[in-house]
Image (cartoon, rainbow, N blue to C red; front, side, top):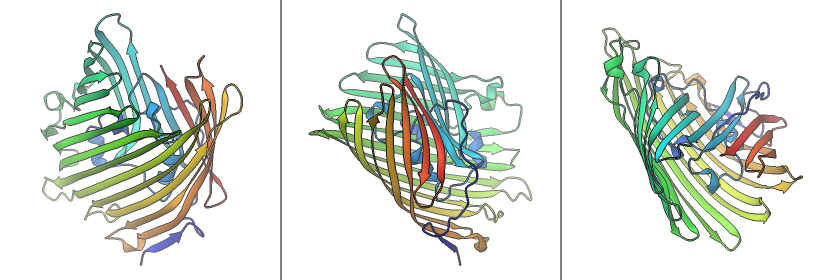
Length: 417
């Protein structure tokens, strides 16, 4: 029988330590595909080196700036942005984003992008230098991450078109490991290239209605790895759509995103026991209403529901053959108050009901079921930065609501240029 835990009485695991963040962590606040493509990378084959438990998604929600659906934070833009906070005694949730466009006084474009992020396969970094042509209404850009080992070089071709008052569209073709087969000294090779097709943008449906979204398709990729003695196939599709509108003094938003992916590994040498069949599905819905309460202050209410289902079938590995299912629904609310010319107090409450199932088909004694109320109090303090207060630094300690204790610390930096 699976072990059952209810958060009203017994916690599944005891948290050790508190957050210590010694730098300014720079990132954005939702899944990375809202801001750019998430191509295949070879490290994904080994999978993530961290686990999702009953509090993992709550931490990630509470480490985002509130309210969650802020139109000004959606489109990619120049600046330094980020969030980082403790999720375990030995683990931080970190998202960093830096984008710089260099002045050229001509139609030439030069730029830099950096992203440190995580997805369902682990932590990763992206870093690109860009060059291209720009006009008032469109840009054609080439981005490259050129490394000392040519086989690891990534490339992206991007086309942007926009009308400042009506629409914006970005189309990107991403080619990770673009030179791999021609530049590697090993027997590894791609039989099907890891190309990613990406589109993102928004359009003004009416004067007070905005529609936006993205789609990210990692086409079927096949990679032969001699180190793993495995033939790996991978494919993934993610997409999101959102709608924002206003009525009287209220601003409303709804946002839906989802992901589905598969990966298989088969051994190709005699006696090899490498075998994996992974399927993954994720869906998330956010509803929000917010209203201004004064100069640069807001009041908000929202709901977020998410489902995460993953079956990592490894018939030769009882420890890692895991079927897990998360179903989590949260309500959140908060408000901003001015404490002075530079400081704001931004408290939020997040609470909801979670159901988590972990099933080990080859090791039933490890099966677990966890369900119950879970939540946090998030009393954030926000310091305005810059001469016009266009940036902010957020100090964000959190407290658990489902038990008496510290819920992890968080620092956020938001500095558009």
